[in-house]
Length: 236
Image (tube, rainbow, N blue to C red):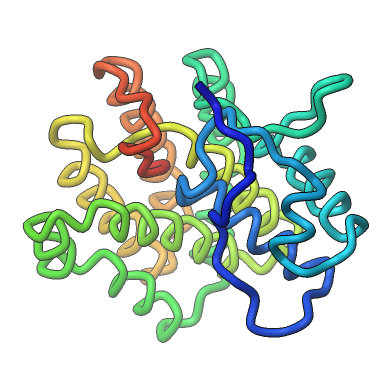
């Protein structure tokens, strides 16, 4: 049963908050599972907890609603979005297939070697194997998001970067890395994309990103769902 936000669940602010700060704190709670799927978001309670007026909280919730992380029900107010269903996951991957392959190609054409090398460092095999061995699944998921958003940043288009970030935020509402073998295959695919970008090979970067997204979706579609807040780990 979903619980109201009537107790402290968010990190405490260190200073007076602006509207963007309120948004960042609530968004962090939604993505990391501190605020569970379906939990009601009481505007007054959130405002008291963060020591702000209702206005920046209302603005933050409206912004989060536009990103799909929050829903608004008539006469009931806001609630954290439920975990994604199979149709929504399919549609998000379809959207990513349209957006991310040409973005990877653009990144390959624009990336200077130093920045492209940083992308490869995210995928370093020893690092990933160590995280998996230590059970650091959440950190691996955060690195996965960083990989895709850094490619978007390398492409040099702020609208694309924002769109990729928002899409990956929505995809935090399902579990990925607990599917058997997902972590190993995912990062092998990441390494091939990163190498193509570093080499400036736009064609291969786009094609490898397309293959990566296709196989990532197939892994999700063919696996047994793990739709619990404890196993939320984000996109591939």
